[in-house]
Image (cartoon, rainbow, N blue to C red):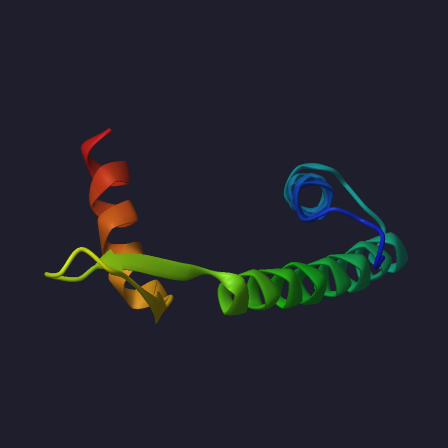
Length: 87
């Protein structure tokens, strides 16, 4: 799964959720899909963590110099939520 891209893993996870919610799946198949889904969630969480560590926000100081600050997801998430609720 290390070669898989985040977007592909997320799409596959969404498909598994749809299958588990919509189809009549045997208990054995449901368990296999659930296990695969858990592995995909772990992969996506790891990828997001790696990306979060790399992101830095550039802030312009008063003197015009560029200052790097660590990314804070708490600062961005409320903005995203507001944008989605107005759509």
